[in-house]
Length: 83
Image 1: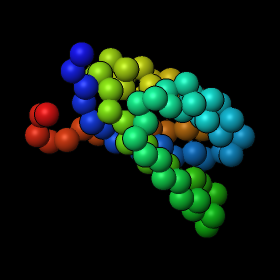
Image 2: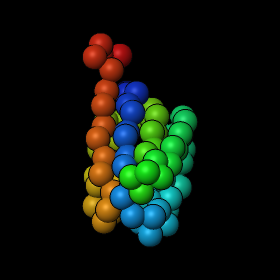
Image 3: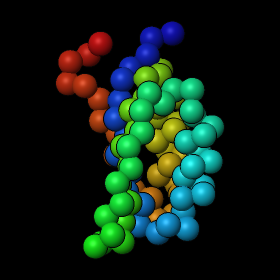
Image 4: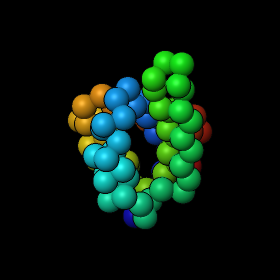
C-alpha cells in the first residue's frame, strides 16, 4: 500500500488533555517517525509536531481522532510535490 509523508501540528491549550493525546499517539506509534514538543509557558500552551509516514486514510484517521480531543487543535500538512 502506498504511503505518504505528513506533518501533524498540534496545539494543546489544556494540559489535562495530554493523557488522551498520548493514548492516541501511542495507538499510532508504528507510523510516527518523529515527535517534538515545545512548551510555551507564557501562553499556557504546548506545541507538538508529529512526522508520520502512512497510507492517506491512516493519517486522516489519526488526525481526526486528535481533533476530537477537547482543548486540542491540529493541522495536517503534506509535501507540495507528490511522492
